[in-house]
Image (cartoon, rainbow, N blue to C red; front, side):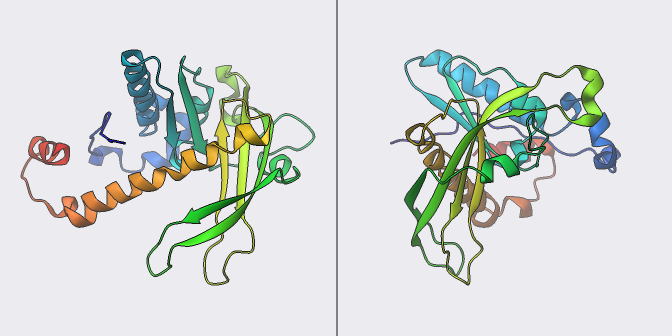
Length: 228
């Protein structure tokens, strides 16, 4: 299957913004770097308009776990999946995300191949899968904004009896796609596993092409180099 670059965003941090992280909770998303996830969703939606019969899934890592991103309406024909980074507040007897998900019974055991990572050889692994619906509550510091509660589905996978010398793999994935059954939830795991290809691409750019060592005198030249 041919692969290509659908869209990319290039920006440089303004030295005047040093220290902005300490007040990030007071800033609108339009003034945060996390705005990139909404831009990428727009790019996927635009691509869907060009090929409406093709199913598209926008996958994000833990950096994509922002409430504005979670609350964004699901574009027609575009699915979303992201890895949870925060133990967010939820409605129900359990107050936070991880507890109700990990309390679910194991729905299935998946046999997946874990690629080589550094000195660790590639291996076959068994993962336990759980899934359930969640209703997320807006962050406390943003209650005045009138943000909606968000109903999503959670898919949790965790390595079973991993080797003693490796860090156990555990993913908590969130999606607006209904995953009421194990059959519905199972495809979400290889969707997220596709992110491994993006990590290889980043390593090629940084280590293979040594993009951070380029001395091109201007931002415009560096942006052209990144495009190539």
